[in-house]
Image (cartoon, rainbow, N blue to C red; front, side):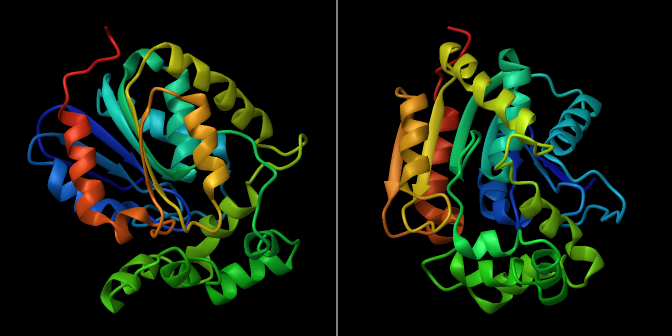
Length: 272
């Protein structure tokens, strides 16, 4: 499992989603590592991590992996920054150990059940056809380089996003993440997500400071998800960027970086 570990100070753990990798956080890593210890993971199957072909690519496994990594690094108290699938994974860990969490930054994600799924993603879940088009034609990571942003990416940045996913074998986790969306009660990850969802109230009641930054042009995690986060965490600081997409850190690097840095530097603590 590949991860970045740079800087000295309060620990910030960055958890990416699908089909990104730790590269998504590169600007934040540079900014925050001047006065924080920043740990940014690549989930198994993603980025520079190993991509085993016989593996349990499930929500619980990814959450367990994150817990094992932080335990191995002797990380006890930390803040979280989560995006996309990183929300369910990071919040899954946070709800297991709310006493260890200092602050949380939420970026266009979910950590609760929903039946809302765009057709373009639903197609990628179709039996046989879905995994085939994702793995054979890179029909998830590549389209995201222009569908997940409102401002065009530079060619070299788009190339970096898809670089780890350059073959059928290397796209296994991308396809598995899509299949792992738990829409039905019998789904293997439904119970895990439900447990995380039920645990969100524990994080709220612990008064853990939360910052929500949201791209309003996200075709997947749309305004409904943003409103759900605000409903569950009514005291959270929140900012809605109506002209930004799912990759909000790409569309608003300066503004999001400034707000996240300021949020993490405040003295507010969940121990109060």
